[in-house]
Amino acid sequence: MKRADLLSRLRSTPRWDVLVVGGGATGLGCAVEAASRGYTTLLLEARDFAKGTSSRSTKLIHGGVRYLAQGRIGLVREALAERALLLANAPHLVHPQRFVVPVYSHLDRLTLGIGLSAYDWLAGPRSLGPSRLLSAGETLALLPTVENHGLLGGIAYMDARFDDARLAISLMRTLLGLGGVALNYLPVEGLCHAGGRVGGVRARDAESGETFEITAQVVINATGVWADQLRQLDEAGLPGRLRPSQGAHLVVDRDFLPGDSALLIPHTRDGRVLFMIPWKGKVLLGTTDTARQDLAEEPRPFREEVDFILDTAARYLPHAPGRSDVRSAFAGLRPLIGGGAGSTASLSREHVIEVSGQGLVSVAGGKWTTYRRMGEEIIDRAAASASLPARASRSRELALHGSTAGPSDDVHGCERPAIDALPGAGVRLHPSLDLREAEVRHAVRHEQARSIEDMLARRHRALFIDAAAALASAPAVAAIMAEELGWTPSQSLEMQEAFRRVAEGFLVDP
Image (cartoon, rainbow, N blue to C red; front, top):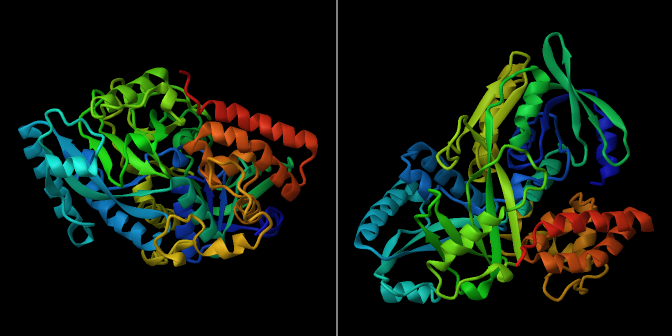
């Protein structure tokens, strides 16, 4: 559906049952949940879908072995159940992944073995395969570049990896297929109160400047790290609940960790685990946990975070990457719940739902793995608060858009034949990227890509895979998008300059 058609539906709908503010994992999950129950549903996103935290994750759908060590059994059990549902409902984007933990002490071998056995037990019949002890030779066969001095063996276990931004786009397309409306670049600028309750929002189309006053039975605040800002528009002077934390990631060539297994480092100096994950033909390294006081729209990894990741990797990889080997570096802000000083690593990743005295439903915290369960709980609360007719959740068995293609690394799944029929199906835009002209046209026509960044960061993951190659391909992408969207030459240059400013933040100085 074209943006003009979605805006027409927005103008012609006098009242919505559910209005969701925020187009990340939580907001999209809420909107899909609401629409699947038959509620008229509108989602508004100020920038692009998954522009913030939801495209900058560690790319894992997992129970969280670290949370198990912290004793958060309920969170782990819930996440493992949701992992199974995602593997079933989005097999084109979520894939089983083997992890190997190299072991250099007998104590670690014992404690990790016990912990991962408990992880298997919590997964129960949803397990992706039992964890198992490995000899030193078996460990080196799976991780041929790992440090072998003092290696006693390893432990292998199963979890899952995914493409976070593509899952967000799949959810957006699922919402549209269910009859809902989702619009990016339509920021909410205020709340409308009537009779002592929140009865809608004031919003503005960032592209045209057109303003809207939209009424709804219930408004859901799913704006992630910006949730406190909307809460304070509802109740001035309300204390903030969120304490943002930054997680940084680096992407390097596959040579540093060949093979199909991911590597887990169980102990780092900031209290987190560190992952090295095969992803999109590269290796993803991360993450950190750094407290932040600001809410940067474009957070960048701090120099010390880059050094920390590289230094930690060097302890396990004799041939370790250096700063010049980093193809892309990115950071995301976590909407953690908590206050005070000290490390953010121990703050809860669980979510909290709050209904204000005026009926604004706000959610804080959470993570990608449990987005569906969060959406179910939020819509239950929202429906009750707004006296909407009670309807049972359907999302546990809801196949997401593109899933009919089955397990595949092809993000477009069943749409591939349609893409291949578009102009430029065989034209690659850069030798280091698998991006073709036809995919750009498809993203504009069917996935609401409105900028070069939308295309190269989230519809295709070029910016996260190889920032220099993404920069080099930007003029070609701009030319295609200009044809599709009617950009003038000056608009095209502005779009390229805007992308350059963002992309430079993904490059690491030597």
